[in-house]
Figure 1 (tube, rainbow, N blue to C red):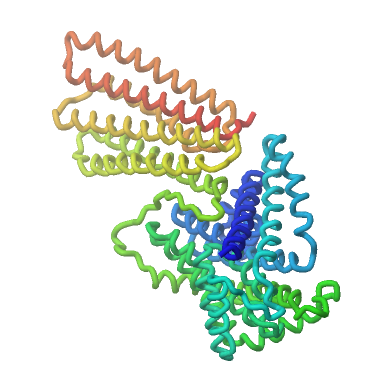
Figure 2 (cartoon, rainbow, N blue to C red):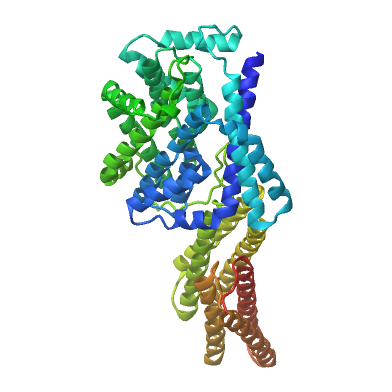
Length: 577
C-alpha cells in the first residue's frame, strides 16, 4: 500500500505543478492568450495554431477543449472554427511526452528544486506580472519534481523482480493478461489507455504514467514490444481525453455539444486509421528512434528504456501531426457529420447562448474564461439598445395596438434578468480563483456594468408600461408634451448608443465628457418639463400629466444608469486620450 500511495503522491505533485504553472502563465500572458483565442476566426489553420499555442502554455488539451466548448456555447467561436482549435490542442499536448521522455535521460529532476528556489522569492517578493512569472517558475519546478518522484516511486521491474503489494500486483497481473495476444493486445491496451485517462482526468498525467511504467519494465523487457504497447496506450489516451469536453457540453447549447462531438470524432477517426497501419507505423517510428544520438540512448545494462520513451514521444507527435494534416482538409465534412449527429431539438425555436462557467478539474482557466464574460456583456448591451428602440417604436405609434410588441419587450426584460444572473454568477466564480489584482478590479467593474444594464432594461420596460397605460386609458398627449418627451428620448438614446459603441473598450475622454453632458441635459430637462407639468395640472388632465412626469423621471433615471455603465466600463479598461 505504501508504494501505491507514494505513486499517488508523486502524481499529485506533478498535477499540482501543472496547475500552478498553468495559472501562472495565464496571469503572465493571459491578455495575449485571450486575444488569440477570441480572434481564432475565419481560418481553420489559424485555429490550429491558436490551439497549439494555448495548449503548449497551459499543458492541458482537456482545459483548452473545455474552453473551446464554452466559447462555442456563448457564440465566440463557430463550430468550424472550434474544430481547428481542437486540432491544435491535440498537437500542443504532445509536448508532455517529450518532457517525460527527457526526464529519463537528462538530469532535469536534479535542477527541479533549484528552479523552485528561483521562482519562490520572485513569487513572494515581486508584484504584478513578475509575481505571476515567479508562480510559473515554481510550477515548472514542481512539474519536474513530480515526474522525478513518479519515476522513483514506480517499482523497477526490468530486472525481473515482481511487485508484491496488492494494488501494484493486480495492475501487473492485468498487464500480463492483456499482453502476448498479437494484434488484439494493441486494441486491448488502447482501451486501457482510455480507462486510464478517464480515471486520472488528464492526458498529460496518463502520458507520464504510461512512459514511466514502460521505462520501468512494466510492459516487458523487449524494447520494441514495450514501445508498441505504450504507443497503443497513447492512442487510447487520445480518445479518453475527449470525455472531459463531452462532459463540459452537458447542459450547454446544441453548438457546444457539436463541438464536443467534433473533438471525439476527430480523435476517433485518427485512432481508427492508425490502428489499421499500427504495426507498420510503429516499425517506422522505431527506426527513427534508432537514429537517436548515442547520448540519448540507453546504457548497455538497460533494455532500451530511453529509446522506448523517445519513440513514444515521436509516435505521439508524428501521429497527431499527420492526423491534423490529413483531416484539416475535411473540417467542413466533420462539421456536417456532427450537425447530423446532434440536430436541433426544435428548429422553430432559436437557441440563445447561455453563459455557463465550466471548470476543468485539474487546470482551471480562470483568466482565460473572462473573454466569455466580456462577450456576454457586449451581447447584453446590444440587447438593451434593441429594447430601447422597441420603446421608441411604441412611443412613436400611439394610435396603434402594439400589445404584441409590449409582450416582446417584456420577454426581452425577462431575458435581461437572466443574463444578469448568468453573468454575475459566472464572474463571481471567476473571481473565486487566484487571479491578478487588475483582473479582480475588472471583474468588480463588470459586475457593476451588468447590474446597471439590468436596471436600464427595467427602466425601459417601465416606460413601455406607462405608454401602454396611456393607450389603454385613451389618454392623449398634447403636441407640446410629445415634442418634449421626444427631445428627452433622443438625448437618452444618444447616451445609450455610446455605451453600446464603447462598452469594455478603451473610452476616449471626449466620449466620457459627452455622456456626462447628456446625463446633465436629461436632468435639466426633467426638472424643467416637470415644473411645466405641475403648473398645467391646475387646469389640465392630472392623470395625463402624471404619466408625462413619470416618463420624464424614467428617462432621466435611464440616462443616469447609462453614465454609471460608462464609468464602470472606463474602470474595467483604461481610457484613451
